[in-house]
Length: 231
Image 1: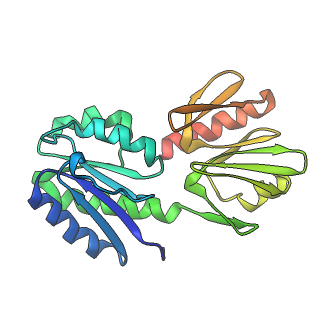
Image 2: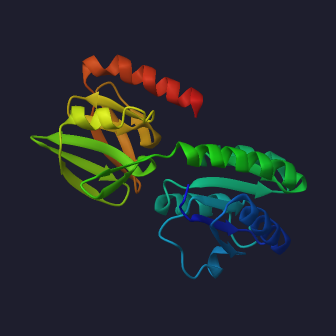
Image 3: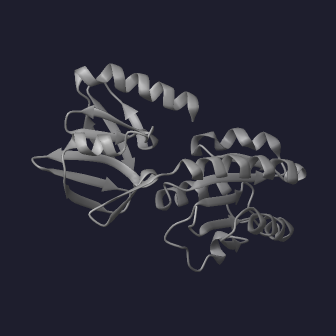
């Protein structure tokens, strides 16, 4: 991909931390791996992480609770849980993790996780408009007003002079964005709820309410159902 792969691993098992670091630096050409045994030991988090790996049973905290807090900061990161107890995987479903690594089957599960992660990362696309780098996985929604588009990202918002049709044409191969209204495009990755006449896009625990036009609803529902099946 050409970018640095940023990884955060939180696990109170030092052997696992070292084993994971050894594997991840082999799996990627350029990787920075932050290792911590506890959230209390975390001194400085990076602005962005591609992968966050957390032990479900941390000695001083619940790994799931840690993930819930981190997901508010790193919405677009991929999350992976680890544990000696396989049955705990069901407790992580609401986080929508990329994978679950069983420590007793580390080599097997790690190889599957890496394959899935590389596939996901390769699907990420970006578009440069007016020197603004618009990353597919960080786009929340696009709003059209007059001759301008307002690009709402996870951390920043931009105004660009462009029509909605021009933007749609430039991003026609972005399978996770869909038009829900003549003035709005949304990223299906961040849909939190769908009602009869609106779509809720979640960011920083706050819902953005996007109107859903009646004549766009059928196509939107079909696209979203397909997205869920392929996710």
